[in-house]
Image (cartoon, rainbow, N blue to C red; front, top):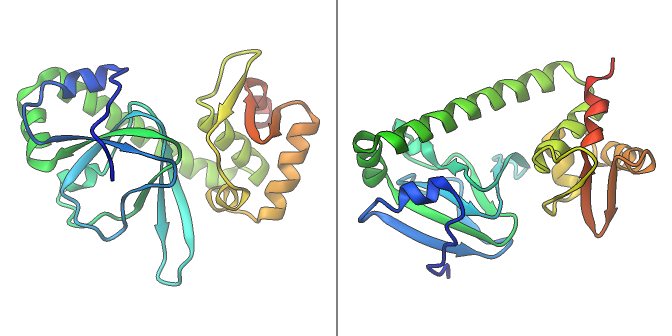
Length: 217
C-alpha cells in the first residue's frame, strides 16, 4: 500500500501544499499501478519525484505505451473535462512520490490560486505541443529518428558532453512507442551504441549528441 511520504523538491509541490484537504501523498515502488484503465476518473495526479508510464490496452490485449512522465508532470487531468473513466493505466516506472488531488479540490484550487492556475495552464500547453510533435514525428520521420527522439525525451535531453540515464524500459515497450518491431529497435540500439551515442550495460544512458540522428537529412 502507498505510504504518505513526499520529498517536495519542486515548485508544483510547494503550490499544492496550499491545499488544506483533498490531497493524498502516495509512495510507489517500481511496477506499482497508480490507477487502471477503466477506473473512475475522480482525481488529478502530480509526480513530485520519480517516473510514471501511461499505457493503453486494447480489447485484444495489445499494450501500447503512450507516455513516460517525470517530476513536475500531471496526469489524470481528463477528469477536469468530464472524463468519467481513466483512458489509460498509470504504472510507476521507478520508485515514485505522487500526489493525488481530488477533482473537487483541484477545481477549487484552479479557481482560487492564480499562481497554481498559471503553472497548470503552462503544463497543459507544453503537453499539447509535445502531442503535436509526436504526431508529426510519427507521420514524417523514420523509425530510427523516432527512436532517437524518444530516447532523448526519456533522458530529458541531457547536457552537452554528458551521458544521461534513462528509466528502465524494455525493447518491447520502445517498439510499441516508436511503432516498429523489436528486432528493428535492437538493430538501432546496437547501432547507436557502436557510434558512442548510448551506453547500456544494465543501465541505459543517452548522450546528447544522439540529436544528430534527428537533425541530419
